[in-house]
Image (cartoon, rainbow, N blue to C red; front, side, top):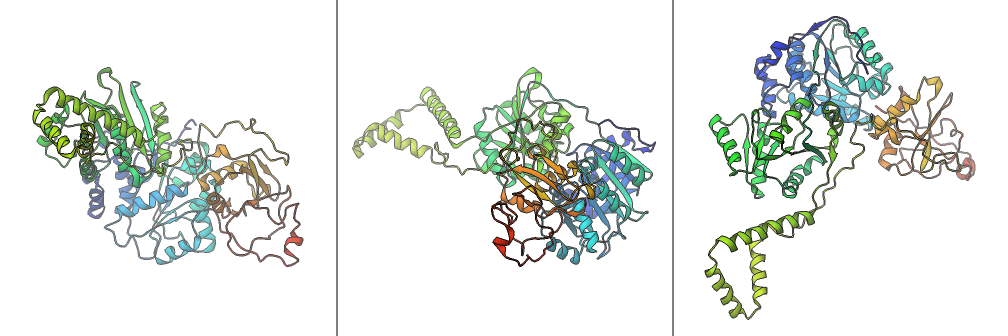
Length: 616
């Protein structure tokens, strides 16, 4: 969406920020700096260099940057340095659009606050038992990272108060408001003290974001990071979706499965260069680390070894890899996703030099799927999905390499003594010479089996490799191709009841945003939505996972209990009749089915009412 005109406010001095070389020069407190060093970060990303000084000075901030640019550290590091935290008061509030991002941001802030014993971070989001959150909030909640709907629930219950908040951050405001949280966000911001510091980060500036800026941000400084870069066309770009704990095993298989000359593996921290290279070396790969901790002479020696073919793989950080120009590099692997798209372009530019073709492979964990779409938009090039090499493929590669080594020995080595041993062994054992040769091959391959037994890695499913709850490529797909069944529901779909309607000021976009954001599913699979005065219906695929249905059974829409449940009749279920206790959601026929009248199945005794807690 086009950016509308913003009020004239102070812009961060780009000349100054572009010269920032280290976190030490930004003015962070020693405890936070220690955590930064422990995380292995070397230099600030562009948004961090621009945002940190302004927030440290107590200014309100408007940050314009894409997802994956290091925004969490950009606001967390200065606010942890500046705020005076008290034992049982919530001093910092961060609002995020999805539960996934809430967990991610909360974990990052807790890491940055590792040397601040008085700081305790509590994530508050839908899909988690609210009683667990009650206990965490009672203990201590100096920093709350929340999704709007669930935070509204806690405010109504009095389990969270915001009258002592010293700073509030809206992260990914455009996505948050696009999911229908405008009213909730305004309600929350109205409860924040007027003197609290405010920061808003957004990749785009739609109308709703501009309204929040005008009404709630006050005077502010602006830190803008433009996406200016595109990638080279002769580089084949692929991504591999893999779980975090499987990354090392997946990396080893990718290295074995790819035909490469030289490989550069990028990681995020200095510690990771050593850890990854050591684990690869233990698997028999010719690898060395490259980080800012190494002396300049050692770094130069490592690069020269790579150039001369004495080294096949280098594991490096962004800083250490600056200026690397080695023609041998045919593959760049992003083992850790980069902070921003400019770093991504810089990294993969280390291959495909001087018009040659190159390969770039990006590792994506389930939490990072949303970042893939950001990189594709910024680079204006698609990144294709790749499959993990199978055991059969790796076996074929190992056999080919083994045969090549045998050929080299046949051509260059003196085999007379080994031939004598072979003949003697054949005679003494009374075995066929082929059997003895096969046994010798079996012994020779024991350290690296030619027929490896590999566990199947449960690679996460690729769902449009897009955003949680929002996918530009799929959100507007026409649904006219779906056939309608005899009961009026689309073929392959089931109809569900929602206890919200027009009187609750609910729109179809609110329902789509709530379901997609809560259940982490693409909006494209959500079927037809019908709005009535007191209730609504929505159609979902009949193969929807049970875990998704359980989560949706506890969601709220615009602060109202949705009471999400399966329908088998066009009419809504008997009002306020819930199910006794907290039962697992089921696709079985409900009591209001035409086939089995309610009273016939359950008698005259009504069910005990239960309260379902809200989505966020």
